[in-house]
Image 1 (cartoon, rainbow, N blue to C red):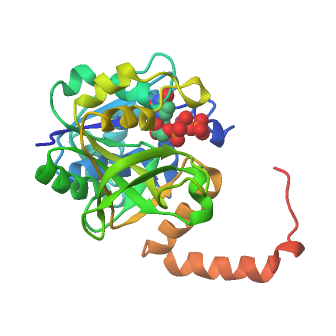
Image 2 (image 1 turned 180 degrees about the horizontal axis):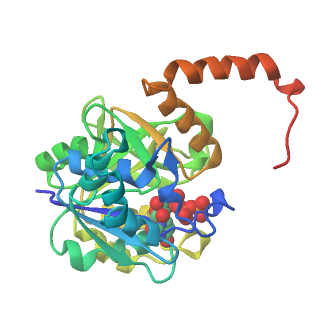
Length: 298
Ligand code: UTP
């Protein structure tokens, strides 16, 4: 049974500079909630009570966010609109542990830091910069498959064929409409060589076998230890399944997706919905077609 989750959140966030020079990208808020809080909530909603966050230099704010802040609590206590209960609850969501990735050597290296914590058990991995909105938490969806097959399970999503070269792509035998037993994993294939248009989407259940696979995996793209490369190694020894999840993925690690996520979440929030839609109409009326927009240097 999967009891623990690992959330890698040590990355440098180079695609989101300058904001990420001194602040963790995982703390970038969608409206008023840091991205990593949505991620922790998904793990908790999936029944996980033990979470290890892989942290690094400049990531203190993440630890503080899930810790008590007595002065703040005192100030907002008893004030109805001040979210006292939500703030207090943040420290009780789960047993949250932290470990620091010493050098930022890639996602595979980050996961390797979890080996003592997860030991001989399977564990969930949720990328700290990726929110997935779904009725059933995606980690729960993967745990259900893991329960059945006792193997590594990767969440995948359909991407446009001409965009496969941006993603890790899986290939294999379909066991049902959404479930596949993998025989291929390829990082950023060309359109011609891609075995499918199913892309790895930032949620996994990994067996402890991943650690041995990571040890055998040489550094890959960007001279970093890549998790996809280690899963290719793992596939030589163990079955791996992919599940096309039900839900919508938001990668806040790139600026355009962050903007889109913010707008979509604002539209979904009752208190902002109509005002944001009215504002967007105003903006469209003001700027019209792309070629009439006046760009600002900020
Ligand atoms: P990304 O590759 O999206 O994050 O990793 P990044 O490296 O910070 O991004 P850019 O490309 O420089 O903008 C996905 C998740 O894995 C974590 C990141 O923090 C992010 O949440 N990660 C990545 C680590 O914990 N350690 C690493 O060495 C790399």
